[in-house]
Image (cartoon, rainbow, N blue to C red):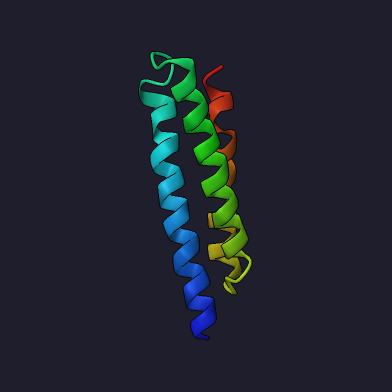
Length: 82
């Protein structure tokens, strides 16, 4: 039981970090230099990947669907810019 709580907490922490990076997609992403844009996108991918890895330990299917949906939006959110 404690292992599942640890996975849930780690998944949510990585999800929030990924959401922080993906929020820059919609604020001033186009005005940033190309190097910073790449750093933002790669950070979102890595953090979302870690969150998806730890979401496999979540037993509640509803919470797991919310976490996976939010991660997919963070990973593919840059498509909405172009």
